Image 1 (cartoon, helix red, strand yellow):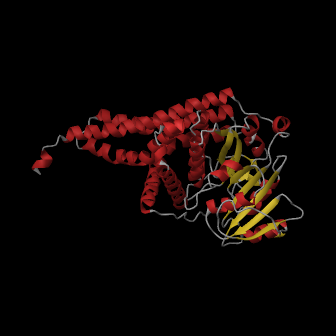
Image 2 (cartoon, one colour):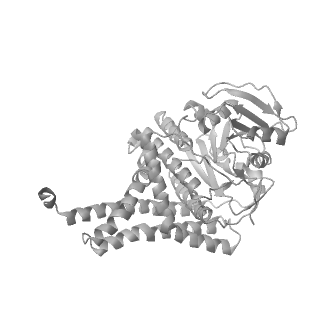
Image 3 (tube, rainbow, N blue to C red):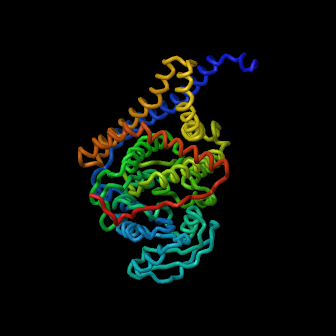
Length: 475
């Protein structure tokens, strides 16, 4: 006790609080920089409203694309999703659906829905993956190929799709997603305008919860009545429009969503395809491409385009959402520590300095510091070890900045893209952007801490993702 009494606990409390507040300020400074860069990027390059203009500009020059859609237990949405893919407005593409050993009727739904028969298709084993059990095709839909293989996980399924594919550009997506008709034409733009440098392009992922779906198309955009889905809508707007557009603009983008991303096939093969045994295969591939291109000293570009939209279904229960967020965080940690040598390494330029610093502050330190702040600072204040100024500074960092960034992201989206037709929807989303900072954000940090714990344990489980399916329309 005498040794403990020798410490200046008030001073220790002050330094602890200051460290927590400074890390929070650094995170929010990054968010503010992202917002400013994204706003400038959208102002300098406004979206093209009409698809007909895109077709005249890019259709003759657009490279063929292989759409890769891995599916595991997706019987609820698989037929709708494939119908959507087969009706895209793009001059030359094939759809490769990879059934990754589904235990439900995913394969049978595909066979029945598209009159599939076993076919013979030559392919190279350029990338390792679990054995293929069969390849199916349809005489009436020659651009559709269905691969049935042993279960090996999403990355393994994508690698099988890469081997089967024949186009120079690959588009990876989730089987439970729906692309807008002109999404490919919009996303391929950087490949056409800068063919010598662009090796990957990401597009925007939006939530279909609350929207009306008909024949594999989003026919009416709305917001969900489910509170969790509503809060996730705000999250997605902030993550894609603000963060990814900003880092793409300065050459520091480290993730392209697995739900929708285009990649040049050659460099993907050169880095060995997707890394198996990881839950963050989308981020892992992008970082591998950065690492390879930097080591080879090749001029390249990885871009993000906010116009092409992919619609997906968000979890509407705390249990499923918690599993998803823990898995996402675990994937981010896996990639960061697997490529730790890139962090602050001048050899990797802005990716090492900015991209990896963002991961370090937001994903590695972020949840730990924020949870400590919620626990320690109020307790230290109540014990009289901290002045009220420290408490107010923490609250300002935690809540005021969070609300400002969320509302500004929503405003930026509406000014530039105008996706929500009803003023009522915008009002609801604005309220959600404020409320997410009181409870939902803290819950997210707990889920991310679960992801930290799973990473430390070496867990590789994906967990069960229960979905309603797109057949259940909402008005």
